[in-house]
Amino acid sequence: MRQIAGHRYINLESFRRDGKGVKTPLWFAADPAVPDRFYVYSTADSFKVKRVRRNPKVRLAPCTMRGEVLGDWINAQAEIVTGPEAAKAMRLLDRKYFPWKQVLGFFALFRKRDHTVIRLRPAEGSAGSA
Image (cartoon, rainbow, N blue to C red; front, side, top):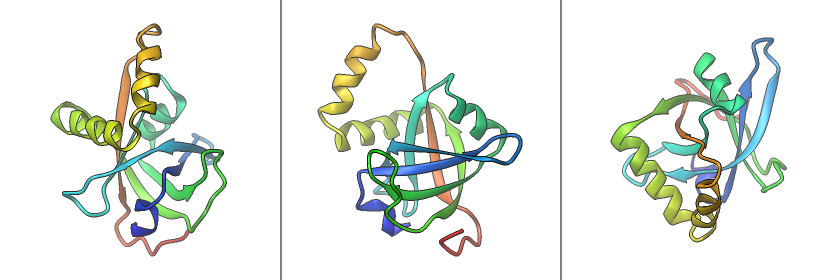
């Protein structure tokens, strides 16, 4: 997933119960200690988190902040993470998107919404584009 690492946004396609894909541009951070591991976060009650909990199969592609895809789609697995791994992921995101993530975090204090961290990895046998 090296083609994603150099970008600022990732398009995450998660799937509804009926199989229809829903694409969402997101901030992401790569884990420098583990190749091909990326993290994204969202509010805990978001539909993308609900879709990932139900079906961990997703697709990823580098994109613009508006979601325009800039490369090939990659089949991947998504997993909700908590504890030390989630804290590490948030530190990576904080560092990559400083100061914008901190500004958004400040305003989020007034809304009292929990966040969920999602780990993304290429699917076994993923050949790249789907």
